[in-house]
Amino acid sequence: MRLDPKFTQVLQEIETTRGVPRDRILDALREGVQAAYEKSHGETPNFVVEINLGRGLIEAYLAKAVVENVLDEQVEIDLAGAGELEAGAEIGDEVLVDADISTMGNLAIHTFKQKVKSLIRDAEKDKIVHLYGTRLNEMVNCSVLYTERGDLYVETPDKIEGIVPYKEQIPRERAQPGVRLKCLLVEVRNTRKAPMLMLSRTHNDLLKELMKNEIPEVREGNIEIVAIARDPGYRAKV
View 1 (cartoon, one colour):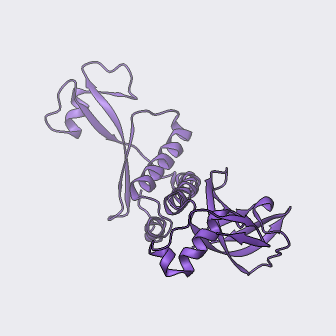
View 2: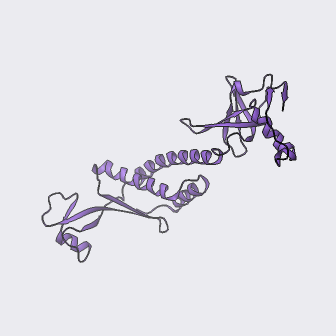
View 3: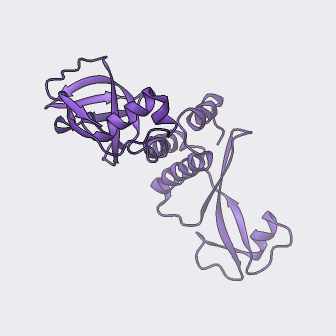
């Protein structure tokens, strides 16, 4: 089955822009082709798919064992038939027999798209965990998106969504959409859709990070912050 050049280009874009490894994309495409084949032919555990993106070609085979007497044509082939496919084939060898997939392109691509959507979600989750999993208790610059049920939803410069729960907000502070806030990252929480950054505006360490950012002597370690007490939005003692 020959792939449309535009489809091949899309595969490359998924790899480069969405961060999905090529081998996982190809595995999804193989699974899509196999699922389409099995829909017409039933379960086929000996189905083999080979993909050559450079040539834009998908080839499919049935792996069959070379036997003296064929009992199951689905998985076996006699020596004479095997010899026509592969010179020097012997009893006990395994040969690949062409499988016709020319009529199942659309179904295979549809299945592939569903699997790739799942791969993209997984890749984006991995990206968030990789970027922020090691940044706990660090200050993060955010822009306010909206408020829902008292919780404040924000977005980082790299378009990762986070939440400042109501109890982690400064009293009387009413941030409007588009306003920039400095928050402390306290947790990367896994949710069904995607990991969510849990942020705080009231944590003592936010003040510590702000002082590191603004005071060179603190940032360079010449002044040590031993303790912080805060009444967020009113007063603080360091």
